[in-house]
Length: 349
Image (cartoon, rainbow, N blue to C red):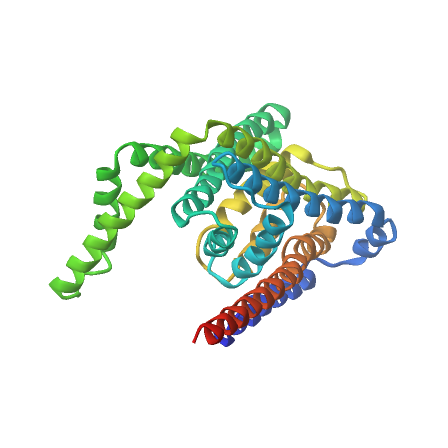
């Protein structure tokens, strides 16, 4: 990471810390101490282990999706690219900013750039499809299982779920009809280029046409040549997201509360959607406020702040630690690679 990225990381952590302090200030009361006396660390340890398990599932998804195209990428290499991806996601607006890292690392594992891009794009497609599906199922269960809670939050959450489902459907249609996607992107970009010179607008338009064609070609190539890869990718996507969403329930049990599985799953889906919106670096501050607002609807206010702190410690701060670890390994490898390359070049001269 360069100095600019370290500044963004510091900004991201600062946002998170400030919001967490405010959340704790407004939620801690005399009952909080009673809850903390009942704290069961074994559940928190289980949450941390489950998070590591979900990251392993992510790495296996990349490994098997690559294997289905005929490329052998080691599990440890896939796991390290997932770790490094976490650090980049923590410094970019929203948490969906680590794709270039994964593409680069697949390329370093001798996966052609086009196939590497297709694999990473298909990961996001599978994520979107699953979030749409389990969002609908979870809200249906919420509606029939808790009338009071359903009337309180199910209706507004339905619109959020409908939004992500709509995006998935729109995406699927655009893949089949690339001209539609080109026109849509051009129309949206037109709102921001009204004052640009004609030459600059034309250059952007040509770039959009080229990128959409490459994007469409990569996806169609993957789907047509790797049906088994989609099966493996779907399986590990399910394991990853269900594991990540269940972490919140384990933390709640660690605080002496019920798991609130259905309610928590719905809340986690909405938070995941919100965190993909590019508002702050790593969605810091946004994630904490979203979790506080949603979980305060069905757990005691006395432990909302403590819960959010523990949740972010596992899913954000621990991710940064893993990200630094993975990035250091990549940087050392690249430095060594460059040194060897220079040494070979000198010998040839």
